[in-house]
Image 1 (cartoon, rainbow, N blue to C red):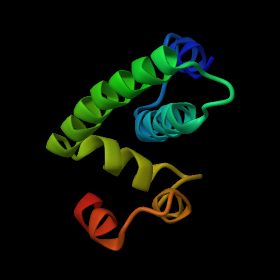
Image 2: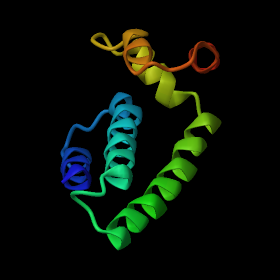
Image 3: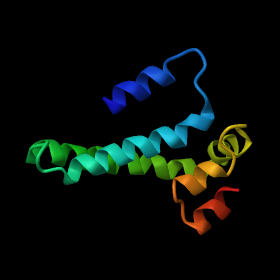
Length: 98
């Protein structure tokens, strides 16, 4: 469901670069929760989520190569630095982002 929502959002006529990191964070959280949820997901599904999370982390890491993602969040009127604080990013990550 989380992937469908992200795909639908980014397929609209007005997706925002400021939404990329929050979307990736939401997907990461959903995958991480699914990996440890032995009651809802079978072993093979949890393994697939683990592979998906590894792939997501690879692309998440690539966002460090471009300041545009963090700049877009900081400059977004409703997000600013609050996003990083609310997402509980370590101070060193926030300092690197800004």
